[in-house]
Image (tube, rainbow, N blue to C red; front, side, top):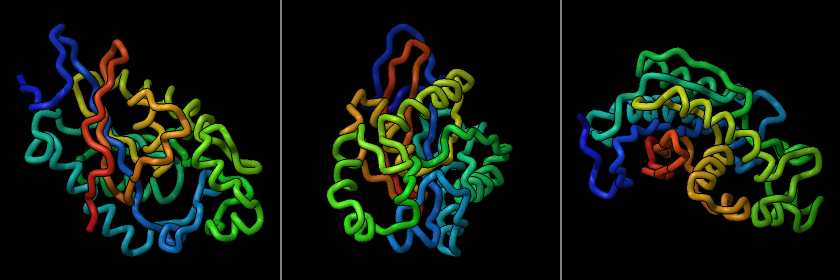
Length: 227
């Protein structure tokens, strides 16, 4: 039996959690210029640097349950967003841990609507003050896009299903910055206006443990896998 790590959520009833490792994809051409890249279009693909990051993330995922978070079960299942960058990252992870990638549309990145592929300066010029509202209010949506609250309503059921099938094991979800921020925020019972404050670097890992009764532990947030 694995002993819980010091500082882990204490449970004295013998309940066993599911572990979910959230992996953000590697960088793309839009990531590298700071443009908004959402769920409205399938692309872009990873850059060469992004492919290297994906390999580094795959190596870190492989180490879970060994020398990285040794109290956790080894990863044995894999779910990914349908976006090209997430699928490419998930393929690297799947090859490393020997798991087939399952796609779930609900883990697609937040939809930016009319802001898609624009840099923040362009958004501010055309829609003054609205980008700040999107980040800080949590319920404000870009024209034709989604708010953080909208995203939460979409991804929470998807996470619940992953966790329900991963009790006693570790599942990996490869997704996006806003998706990971949202799932971490939900796990902490934080309101949507706080989710945008969570920093999720490319190919970082965030780890949640989820019990069948709904109790949740945030084990790690934005843990860097890439250099």
